[in-house]
Image 1: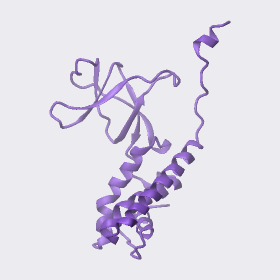
Image 2 (image 1 turned 90 degrees about the vertical axis):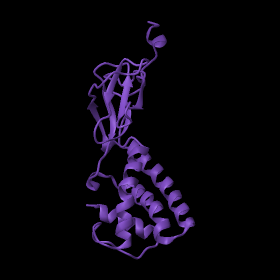
Image 3 (image 1 turned 180 degrees about the horizontal axis):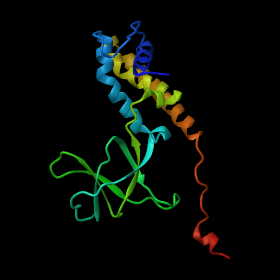
Image 4 (image 1 turned 60 degrees about the vertical axis):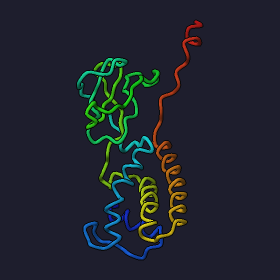
Amino acid sequence: MTSEVDICNLAMADIGSTAVISSLGESSVEAKYCNIFYEAARDALLEEYEWPFAHRKVELASTGTPPQQWLFQYAYPNNTIACRRIWQLDRQAAPLPFELIASDDLQSRLIVTDTATASMMVTSKVTLPTLFPPKFIEALHFKLASMLAMPITKKRTMRSDMLEAYARALTSAATSSLNQQVGALPRDPDWITGRG
């Protein structure tokens, strides 16, 4: 089972570091930078794609009065990295419009839409590495390596190399993820079904 420390050690190996950390709490320079960048790298990768292991449906809590152009306003769900779409029973229906806005006091994010009692399909903030598929871990350690490259190696070319490796790993992880699910078959348009 892969841990946060394992992912950090993979990232350091990617940039050519021979250091191996045994805890994110240790006082080494490498552990310090892993502590700074790990969560940001993980969350950025979670936001990049609609990962099935982080995908969930949440009920939205109504809050406050929406701006004039919208009928309903909801609180941004806790532990959510990205709001993907308003959930609908008919998965082939046209997507329902929504927007993310800031609250008037700029202290929170809100969701506005014209849909009453809305549920949202979101990407959750998954923090347990044991839930990460192998291809996600590969993309994550390259993303983390791109962030560690400058403070640890001081080489801009190393950062560029890690960003390229990350882009390839992200594509591979997204493809692998798509290959592990089956979407709904496309529905025939009304002009075909209505011919009789």
